[in-house]
Image 1 (tube, rainbow, N blue to C red):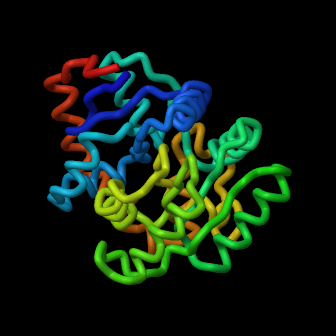
Image 2 (cartoon, rainbow, N blue to C red):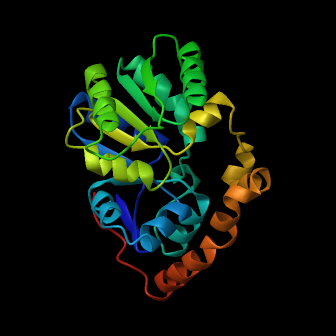
Length: 256
């Protein structure tokens, strides 16, 4: 079920329902795009004024990737809980185990060559029999460029059931929208820096900080030059959207 929140939507997946949805879509060869929805993503969605993002958001599922969205949803009366918050740190291992057991194929697109190679090899070692391959995310993403066409051909030649794209927002979302009609993967997911956490090239916040909504503080102190604007400036814009929701609660149920 999807709920209106901060001028866009979130879906109420928990870990079990998300994994079931992914497997079901892959088995049925049914195209589904699953985006990561957090405060930074919502800020980018509104402030970029990108028609591409709006089009993609209108057709995609939005997995909750941040406790503040759960808290606000609960304040609006939506039946959300901490189980509806799914970050890639929590999702990666259960997803890889499930797709290994279901004999599905995964293609990971994103990160630098060192990080993605190391991360994918770690997953292969951890989940024996997992069918996964990769390509780094440093290429000309212009739809008509030779590099981009070669990447699409590489993905299609592998014929993955699940394509995971981690090239940062909004670059990854724009790439998905530009190329989705040429890609033969059933499920396409955005993931940001997920493989870098697996590889250890980006440190993983303690899980208690994620569960209590303090993961942002860990990231800010780890890399203040990268995250100061995201965590100290962007929330002021989000506060205005949240105040609007609380003054005029949106319709709760949008779609199933």
